[in-house]
Length: 395
Image 1: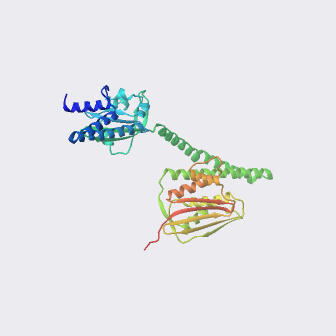
Image 2: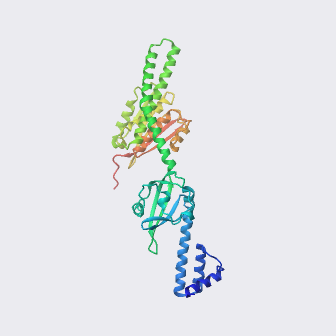
Image 3: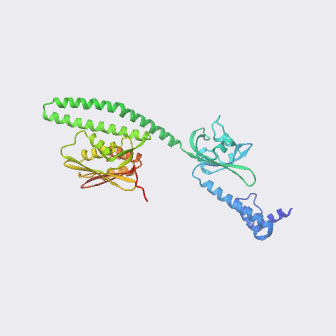
């Protein structure tokens, strides 16, 4: 027996390991600690170094097992990735037992046929944060994963690869379904509903103008108002769609121009509605068509409040920001309408003003600003915090 074997045997005997056929990582650490404690000099240093390496490997193994996604460690056999170990989630998702696939080429297990897969692929993806890939399970099911890989040279000079697979199959399918639904929704609003409502409003207007019965005239007028509201919602929804689908250019516009265009869009203000405007000579950076946001704020104040009401439009300026404030003397916006914007979801409780609020919200966000809405019994205040076109220079 060599001196080294004798030292290890003594440590085993001291720990009661003589009958064990294999060692766990913890057992190796304990043997190294025993040797380091009994010997001085070079042998103790070696044992201490082995102990440190063993502890590091144990920490890595623990981390690997607790990764919530499938994870694999590979070695490279003539550039072919072969499985060294996998975690429990890998076994669950891909359907292979760790012991059964150790030493097997990874490509034979999870990579679709006719797909390039070797050490060069790992090297190319090593610096990428993620890569969308298709992989197959033991049952032949194809799934989509976000793959993250890394490579590292071990102390012995071998190269190890580490891969983590995040299953995004359901997300991809959901995004595909939502895109299809959006396209269908867009076509319906762009063509069917908008065109059909235009016919409805024209016919109702024609009928209402020729009716002599007061009750029938009133009914036709109510139907015409409802059709016009739906047509307005369709137009606003198209505005939101354009804003979401594109990255509109920002331009510099004066407050007077923005507000003037918005007020002009109101074809005829009701007799019991007055608009008071007090604006400084300032300009802001906004996306093209931003006057639609201001117009919707005015329209909401008119549509959802009984007269008489006064709409006040003013602005407050600081070094980099212009706060455009549109307030009214109406009954105040409902709390759930404001919560809708804060939560980012539409609810069944919200009524027609919700579409106008979304229009304002998207225009302000795309302009790099923030929308603030406050309501009380004495009215509603809409504040659009926008970027000032010419910030004050500080000395």
